[in-house]
Length: 337
Image (cartoon, rainbow, N blue to C red; front, side, top):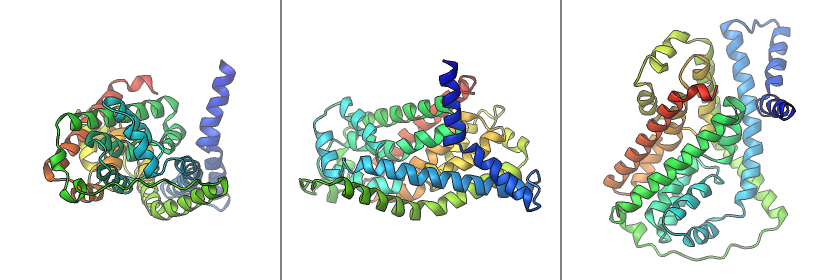
C-alpha cells in the first residue's frame, strides 16, 4: 500500500504538478544572477513555472477530452439525454458536461441548442452548470495543485450542485421564462457523419489550437495575479479577508468572483496563491466556482436566451450552492490537508 501511495505522490507532484520544473527554473534564474528568494525573483519564477505547467496540461487535456468529445456531438448528446427522464436525466446531463471542455460562455450555445431541441429545461440547466464548473481537465489540474481528495470532492460537489440546481428549476415549471425564439425553434435531427480516427485526431488538434488561442490570455492574467498575490501581498491581509477569522469569507469570494471571466485554467494560479497565503480551502474553491460558472459575460449571453426571472433563479441557485460547498470545505478542511 505504501508503495502505491509513493507512486501516486510521485505522479501527483512530479508528473502532474511538475515540481521538477519549478526547481529547474529556479536554478536557471539563479544561474543568471537573479535571487529567486526576493519578491521580484520569486514572482518571475512563479510566473514562468505556472504558465509553462498550465499550458502543457491545458494542451494535453484539451486534446484528450476533445477526442472523447468527438463521440458526443450535439446531435448525439440530445439523443442520449432524450432517453432519460426525471433526476436520472439531470445526472446524465451533469456528467455529459464533464466531457465538454468549455468555459461558461462557450456552454451557452449548446444550452440553447438543447433547449431548442425540446429537452426538459432542468436537464439543460444541469448541463449548463456542470460544463464550466467541472470537467475532466479540472479534475486532473486540481489534482496537480490541491491533491487527489480535494479534486475528487470538488468534482462530486460540483456535480451535485448541477443536479440539484437543474432539478429545482425543473420542478418550478418555468418553461415560459425561456425566450420565444428558442421555444418556437424546431429541432433538427441530423445524423452525425462517422468520423475516422484520423478525423478525430484532426478535430482534437483543432480544438487545442482554438481553445489555446482563447484561453492563453486569461492564463497569463491569472498567473500574473497569482504571482502578485504569492510574492507581494502580505500574508496577514489574505488571512484577515479570506481566513478563518472572517465568517463571511466564502460569501465575499463568491461576490468577487461573479464579475470576473475566466475558465478553470485561468483561476487555478490565483487560487493556488491565495491558498499559500492562508486563505481557507473552501473560500478559494468557492471563488473558482463563482468565476467559472457565474461570470458576468456568460450571464449577459444567457439573458438573451431566458427572461429575468429565470436568470435570477439560476444565479440564486448557483450562488447558494457554491456558498454551501465553500463552507463545507472550510468545516472539513482538516480532512483534505
